[in-house]
Length: 120
Image (cartoon, rainbow, N blue to C red; front, top):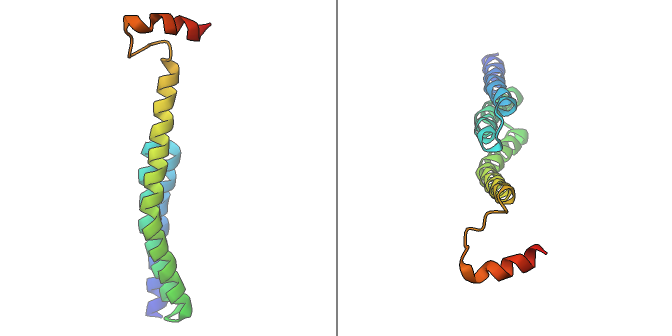
């Protein structure tokens, strides 16, 4: 009886941790800003929901699988977030460079003739 109440309470706490994450993902415009609430939802929300599921199912092989899933998510989540943020940064950097392609940062007088040939 007590384990059922604790299990339900942890699942509700996990769901309440997911709600701000969902709102944050849809509210922010830039992808790098969306990653923070998504990461919070993944870590805290998943932990509490898994803990509640472990209390509801009892200590068995299913509980061990739940612990393995949480550990896998905690190990792969930061790496995934880092790679996505790096990709987003590089794409944004390339988009900015494409917008200002007419500006030659390494301009010197020797390259004037070469620049005209490239444009033709």
